[in-house]
Image 1 (cartoon, rainbow, N blue to C red):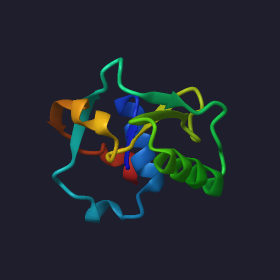
Image 2 (cartoon, helix red, strand yellow; image 1 turned 180 degrees about the vertical axis):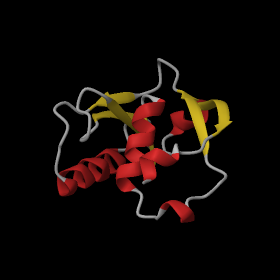
Image 3 (cartoon, rainbow, N blue to C red; image 1 turned 90 degrees about the vertical axis):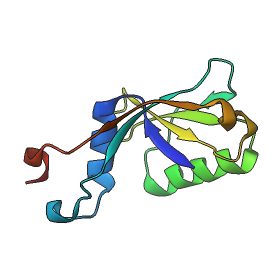
Image 4 (cartoon, helix red, strand yellow; image 1 turned 180 degrees about the horizontal axis):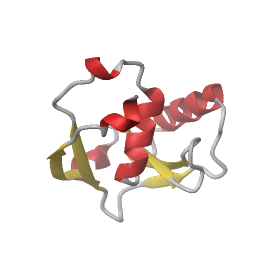
Length: 113
């Protein structure tokens, strides 16, 4: 599964909240990707989205096990008004999901102090 965010700022927050590395061990070759999912690719929305860690993992597992969609939109636990996108890399429609842009990325050091 690929875990993505619907906006660059949410992607930064999600990485920071899940990252368990001191600033000096952060890789210096990070990239910010822009992914395009065609409108007709099978996608679900999980609403309401779970908020607990165990419930989030169970929802992700259920999404993968069902195998009937390439993507599922879920609310961010940190910013419920924003959406994360979980991509099922085993789904046939993933061949149509493309990376549109790649750019070098570095965290602003103020976020890490």
